[in-house]
Image 1: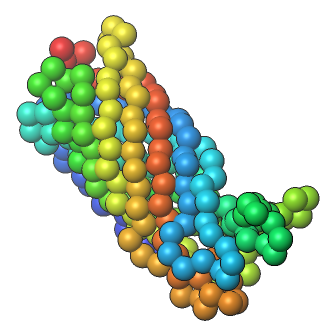
Image 2 (image 1 turned 180 degrees about the vertical axis):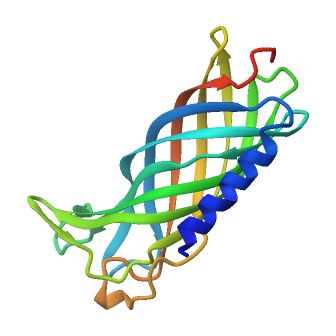
Length: 215
C-alpha cells in the first residue's frame, strides 16, 4: 500500500470521526504562488522567484471553540528561476525556469478570532511531485536530476473572512518552507543540487458551513 493510500485512509478516518462534533466548513480556493528554491545554487547563479497557480478544496473540522483542523488537498505549481552572472554583463541574466508541480495534502490548524472574522493558520504539507521540467527560451525538457517524489513543508499565515449571507468569502496570505532536501546532487552536476522549496501564497475562496444554524 502506497504512502498516498495511507494518507487518504487517515484523512477519511479523521473526517468521519470529527464531522459529528461541532460546526464544520467546506470550501474551494485558488490563488498564486511566488516560489523559489533555497540552498546550494549552481556556480555563478542564484535562485529567484517564479509565479504559479494554487487551486484546491478543503474541509475545516471543529476541534473546540474557534479551533479547526483544516484538510486541504490541492494542486500547486512551484519552482524557481535561475539567474546567471555573465562576464561583461552588469545585471544577472534569467535564462532558465524550473517547474516542480505538486499534488499536496496539507494538514493545518486554524485558530479564529472571537468574532470569527480573522484567523491564523499553521501546520505541515506533504506534496507528491506530479510533473517537473526545465525550460529555456523555446525549449523544454524533463529534469535529469533524480528529484524526490515527496516533499514536506511547513506552512503558516493569516486570513480574513467576509460574510456574504450563508457562505463566506476569505482572503489568506501564507508562507511555506520546505523541510527536506529535494536532491543531494553535487553543485557542478545539477540545476537543483541540495535545495529546499520556499515561497509565499495569496489565496482567495468561498466556504460554506455544514450546519445552517451556525452564526
